[in-house]
Structure formats: C-alpha cells, structure tokens
Length: 352
Length: 283
Image (tube, rainbow over all chains, first blue to last red; front, side):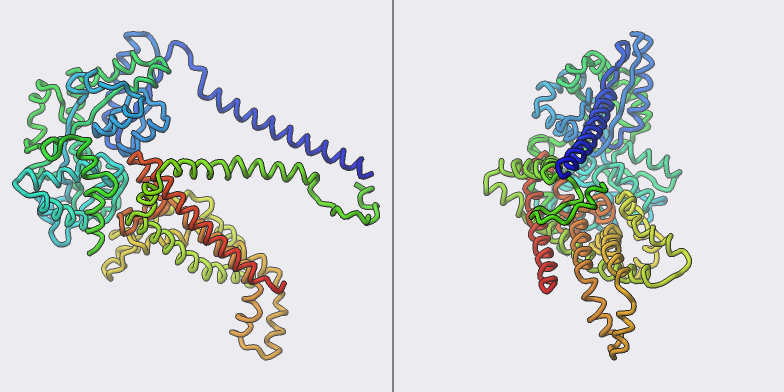
C-alpha cells in the first residue's frame, strides 16, 4: 500500500513539475521572440538622452524619420529614453542597448567611453566637438518676481527657497552648482568665499530631485520654492506650460552648458545600425535642424543660425567649465566625487 | 486515498506528511531559495569584496553613510512602533465590532500592498507641501512634513500598515470574548484584562507584525524618495544613498553600503526572532 501510494503521489508531483516547466518554457520563448524577429527593411534606433530633451528629440526624430524613409525606402523607428544625465549614462553602461546617446555633460559620455562601449576620440567624429547646441542655467521665478531675484547673491536672502536637482545624479544639478561657484570665482571671489556662498545656497534648497524634469514638476506643480535653477530651454518650456505663472530671469553671469552626443559604437555595430546612427546625429548639425533647435530654446551651434535667432537669446556672460577648473574630469573629482566639495557643503548646510 | 485512511496508525517512526516526498519538496525549496535569495545575496557580497578593507570602510562607514543609516533605521523603528499601535486598534475594531462597510474597510487595509509606493510618496508630498491640502494648515504653524523625517515616517507608516493588522487579526478572531467576561467576573479592571489577558495572547503575532513592518520600512525606496527631499546628512535614506553611489559609477562602494544594510537588518531580525522565542519559552 505504501509503495502504491508513493508511486501515484510522485507521479502526480512529476506531472506538476512537468506542467510548471512547460509553462516556464513557454514564458521564456515568448519573452525572447518579443526581442527578435525584426523585418529586414526596417531599422530601429534607441536614443538615450537626458531629462529636458524630450520635446526637442521628438521634433527632430519626426523630421529625420521622414527624410530617412524617403531616401532609403526603409522604415525607421526611433525610441527615446530620458532621465538624469548620469543615471542615463549608467543605464547604458549597465547594458541598455542605446545606439546613440546625447547627454548633458561631457563626463557622462566619457564614462560610457571609459567602459569601452564608445570608441575613444568620439568628440571629433561629429562637427563642433560633438556639441550640437549649447545652453545655460537661468533663474525661473514666480510671476512678477515677488522676491525680486536678479543675481546669484539674491538666492541666499532670508526666506528664499531654491529648487535645483541633485548634482550627484543630474546634469542640471551639476551645472547649477558650477554656475553658482563660478558666479563667485569669475567675479573676483576666492574659493573660500565660493564655498561659503554655496553652503548658504544649499541651506535654501528644500529638496534635491534626481533630474531636471523632476525639479520642474516640484517647482511648477507642487509650487515649492521661489526660484528654480533650470536649463534655459526648460525655463522657456515652463513659462509656456504654466501659461505665464512663472517667468525667466537672466543672471548677469552663468555657465555655458555644452551637451554632447555620440554613437554608442559597439552597440550600433552589433545591431548593424552604425550608418543610420551616424546620419541621425549629423542631422542635428544641419542648418534646418539647427533652426528647429533654436525654436526649442537651445542655443544653436551653427553661427549663422545663431545670428538669425540672436534676439531670442538675451546675451549674458557665460563662463566655461575650464574657467573654474582644469576640465570636466577635474571638476568631477574636485566638486562631485565622494567626500568632495559638494559633500562637504551639504554637511555644513545640514547643520544650521 | 481510502486505503490511506483505513491504514492503522503504524508504529513506524516516519511521520506521514500532507505534502509528498520530503526529498522533492525540500530540494525544490532549496533550489528556489538559492536562485532567488542566496545567489543574488552572494553576488552582492562578492562585489563588495572587490574593495580593499580600507576602501570598504571608507564607503560603508562614511559620515554620509552613517547619517543615512541613522535616518533609515530611526524612521523605520518609529514607523513600526506607530503601525503596531494603529494596527492592533484596527484589528480589534475589525474583529470585535459590526458596522456598516466593515468588509469594505477590511479589504482596504491591504491597499498599501497593491498601490505602487511611489504613488503614495507623491500624493503625500503633494498634500503636505506648503500649498497642499494639509500643508496649507500645518506649515503656518511651523509643522513641516514634506521633505523632513516626519514625512518619511508618515509614508513608512502607510506602507507598513497591513502587516500588524493582518498578523494580529486572526489571533483576535480565535480569542473568545468569554475570556474577557471571565476576567471581568474575576474582578479584573479593564486595564488588567487588556494587559494580562488579551495582550499576552496577541503579543507573538504583534511582534511578528512589528518585525515585518520594520523590515519593509528599511528597504522602502519608492515612496520615501518623493517626500524625503533626499538631502544628504538630513533626510537621505540608505537605499537612496546606494542608488546615488551607483549614479557616480561607484558600483562596489554602493554594494558596500548594501552589505552594511543587510547585516544590520539581519542582526535586528535575529534579535526580534529571539525575543519571539523567549516570549514563548513556557509554551
């Protein structure tokens, strides 16, 4: 009897196991077929970018797809991914199969290059050191500028709350930090004075979002803070989006932000998209697209287009990262690495 | 089956179990645990082991990390205590009283499990921000919830709410209210009935619920990051620190923080388990 029952029972459990395994197998095969099997006459690009480029990418993609399809007769889809610049770089390093990246800072693409996914010398494979457009950090304030914010020192006045994302994860955050730092040191202040100013500044920051778009949501929708240190294009977008609830103030001096782009060479090679990816990025430098870029409030790199849109972008003194450090690598170690100046400043700022 | 029932209780030492084949089910359990738990944990430890001891120490015990551990464990502890109190009261109400909409409220208790915690974090942050529904009234009084530890505790209380209710509720259901009558007849005050009759009965379940809430709170990420403000040395939690280190491409350093978090959590859970066993020493 015992033998008999043992047999039936084990047979039954084997059935269960078999059923379970079949289910798993079906699940797995479904999952894998989802990723493969693309028709030969179509291409797909994945463009991984930073947080505030959603709109501009959509606009450029639409144009490029149209042109690509008429020129080659092939179908093209471009997928977009957006997030904090450093987070996005990490996703690509971790295996997100991006064909092209456009990130807020040179160091973020360089981090991908260091991991071996992008061939060295990438800056020189596209025009203008692979900088399709530049931008700056501006102040976005509430309608009528009730706190009368005009220059960097105004940000640390009593009762002013400042919104800016986390420099550890966000390009916007790093640029805000550097802009604030340079606002002291490029106008005759010492490093000690800059340190004191930034400690004061981060005392006025109630929340550190991880990316620029998150900061905008906090400022616009949650209505937290009196001033947001934002990308110029994001500022204009916020003005449009809020229907005039906020306005832009140009500080007399700010940082020249130079977002860069590159083909992720080893991904593109494996996917056979190198040619398309290169054509797509070169497209950004064409006058027609440069105009589109300017219309989306990024400062075009093409000098002729820049002149055409001169009135749109008020002049201000823009210093480069090399004016306040030896370069991006140096800036990263000196300001943002573990235990560096930003950490020290946050610690001082936390102690009231 | 009938043969199994009719079979006399044999003198064999082997106990008959409901689930067949100890070998099979044990093997299955160990395989699943290995795949889901041990290997990922080992990978985490292995990555952290690529650091030299001094690097590990610098990453895992920096001042920023210490302050993050403090925020995490402090807020989780407070939240678990609050949840224990609220949870017992809720379980009591749900078991002992009949009222309209009871079934509905009962099923509502599990909502924090189903709701993406990020939604909870966002909603709370919006409500308690300066212009939010609650913040509007609280902020003028100097009570800041959004972007403070208070906010972190609040979302953790929300996220962990079901645990104590769901562990204590079944015990209360089996607890006959005759016991309370008996206690009263024997001259016990209300407080004595509560502390000497009811509390000892639900205590093991309460402790389990507390431990679950506490553990859940330590690992919680989604809801907290929206309300904490993520300010270093102030409101940054350890899980956010891990993500933040990852974003600096410092993978091994991030796992070092994770390892400390795992070890401290394990120690605390072992202590709580020990307390539970010590509690049942006379059973």
